[in-house]
Length: 162
Image 1 (spheres, rainbow, N blue to C red):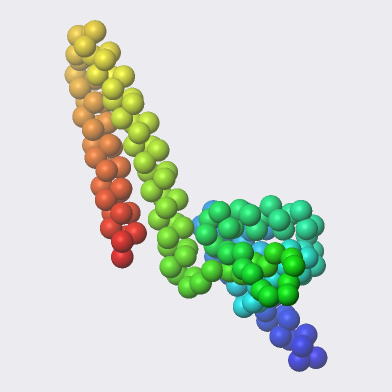
Image 2: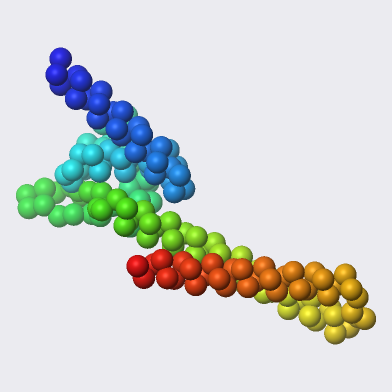
């Protein structure tokens, strides 16, 4: 009976942690897998993960690779074990803030580059045409938006260094 309550409690914790990490852009399986690995507190094989989560080994392999690329899990070596083992990285706050900041920086930089390209196109068009009040207004707004993205970039770089 006590084991059942421990399993039920662990399952509830895993479910709530999974909901939290989904907010960082993980799909539900990745979130559950990360939560399970984190709560287990020890390195696990793909077979163990597959059995625990009721998913195929192929699904576990795909999702563990994704988590590894995001630097949320690490493949570890253990003497005498021939299968790959994986464990969740820690501490939670640092790994997820690093992940979140990188994701936001990548998105903000991509958007800034697109906006700068639009700005170059507008400038080329304005050289050909007579400038108008409408185009001056949109150009000014575009400069403000690009400035906003530059400020975001500085903020994220500062947060990354902290």
